[in-house]
Picture (cartoon, rainbow, N blue to C red):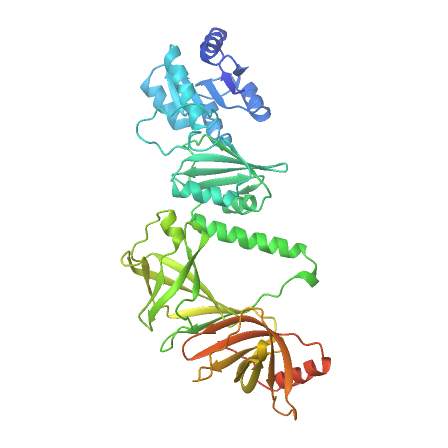
Length: 476
């Protein structure tokens, strides 16, 4: 049931308005107030979907009720009843009215105005859109008026991409907030005593919010200037900090140091066929791509992510991507721009070669550059000779060169193997039981990442002593 509030001092006019509304909306809940103070009382205590009001009420200045509605209740649409047509009507609109209606009241016109404003507020799920101009005002034809089970940040990105205009009423466990959007851009926000970006940060952190689509008053001034993506990223950062503070010290992860390196004169450690994760502003889901080729210091060639093809998202030269990939226990990421895209004979993206790469070590243990000859024992009596080129207390990276006629290692991920080596300052060879975690092959060699399964404390002590005597890796 919808609720319309009538703010009118004339009893005869009140009776006329009630009769007109009941012609098409018999189930409408109608509230009445004949003074400004009574109107404010209803607005504060009752849920109201639409207001029809006289331009001036007793105990209020001219047009004051319209200004109060626009400033304090901007999600409630209003129709102002005016006496002298365009002049008073223009003043009513400037004061915050959604529409004006010149007296004497015409039933057909008033009912159409009521229907239009309820539709803009998203209240009636069955009303058809009668606007021929393709308005961007969000209507119930686009979405249900009340939404649950959808993340607020996802819905905001959806509204931004479709350039919608509306007010969102956000509710979560006795908390209420309002978000104002104009053509998809956040104009203002409020919850409790918080305003602007701080209010958005707070609402993004709410658990299981319900989203109600409401009317948007065009008189609302812009208070938020930051782009939506920046606001969402800051919201997530604050949310992570808040959750981290709730955890006991023993459960908190230490922040890993972010490092960087220049690519000038060096080739990025990306092999053909390597999997990449690509991010694009405005698209929440990560996109997967595959490395196809590169010209060092010039460009990278990658496959067009299938996600872009599915959603038919067009990218143009200059489009910025964030590219991530894993290699030897590090997470690498860099920014790049699209040079061009081709569709034939294969959908490919040509990206600018990044001058700088950031990376983060994912392993908890420090690792050291080494060159220790080793023998790898696999199942079925297979033996391969190589070297340990990267060593930590929890695992190693072994390199096996391709030699003829010796076949290339037939090793699978998760295979259990034995790595035998002679550590410096240790008189006897040591056998490490290990499990294969990753492997990269090309025509020249294979690099096998293994995780040690050490049960002998004496063996762990020997390894720790050796690692303490060498410098840890400071760059990949």
